[in-house]
Length: 487
Image 1 (cartoon, rainbow, N blue to C red):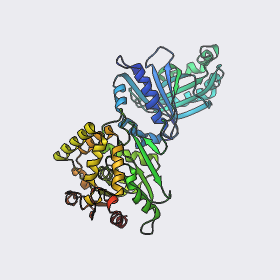
Image 2 (cartoon, helix red, strand yellow):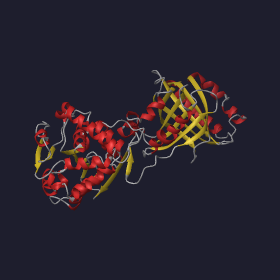
Image 3 (cartoon, rainbow, N blue to C red):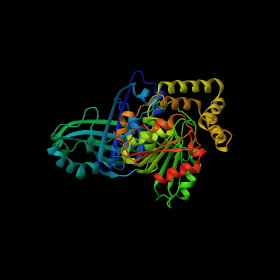
Image 4 (cartoon, rainbow, N blue to C red):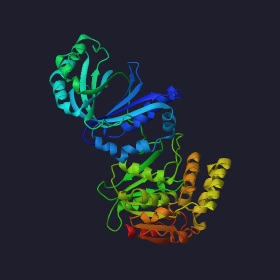
């Protein structure tokens, strides 16, 4: 598929479809998600004006159909929100077709109040004669119908419920746009449909269906907060992108319960330059810190890795020079190297494991219960004391981190803890192609020893002295020395 085209989706709600939920989902989630993509030029919903089914259709003009095969678009279906799954499960039918633009006459800047859509299958041998009739007679007569705005023809390239036509046949869709006050039941249209030439070429027609639609709603891009993107299932990723747009990009992924600001010192150093080279720095809050939308899917590490893929795509960053993560972010960086090997040159994973353990899962359950029973402040106190070495419990960075943890969203924390209780990357580690650096604070319990046994190809390990779970915050100089040498 390539070139300009048309995406048409016809839906027949079922007996269990909640009409209010259906329209709210379609108008405020499903359509607006697509309008964020630059190749989706516009989108509109129409309701049947002919008492036929399906009763609803949504149509989108696409600048280049090649984009519909790319992950930036296909993920909209692969990562549906929980709400979308619920609503769609009630439909009686959903028919999705993709067409390439075949011809166009007339123009309209606004959505057409009324559409006539004619779907027709022709014997391939008669297409040339049909085209000649359409271009030399029919469109001239159609354009004389009062209220006519535009007529376009499209060729089916991806079939819907009925599939593609059999060999020797082609399917076309003619979409005629009219004003609300028009003459589609008048003499001009009747004359256009009853000429000797038209009667003569009917022999080429295998099937024909006419639908009459009335405009219902225009989609607008989903509203996003400044410096943030919203994933396909409603999770917000707040980001900060700094530095020379031409410089290599280094991405930083934070730990559970923290924000992108744990990397402030590291980002500053990279922006100023290390090894005589400066970098462009992308930091973001992983899903779950500040919010956890009710319609979002359960947080798992495949989803977290794909969140980073989506963020890079939305920011038009084809490849990161390195993805650097700590704790939950470290697992994300490893899984990103597994799932999206073409989108990074290197990875750095700090103070993390490659699989959840039974004892670890029990600990997360206890932490969630502590937060629910005594509040996030109580969780912040014990968490930061566990993360930092005793000598640094009173440090400015420890206090800053404690404030972050106390401000984290409880439900989001529980979701992220669920990811840390449900992952095992061991079987995929051998597939990693990107060079890697594993880092751990010497004071982070058994992790330094455990990480040296990961067995990831082409990786090295570096221990950071006088540091615990967040070594960049306890021994910045040693951390930067290790990172700079690897970059």
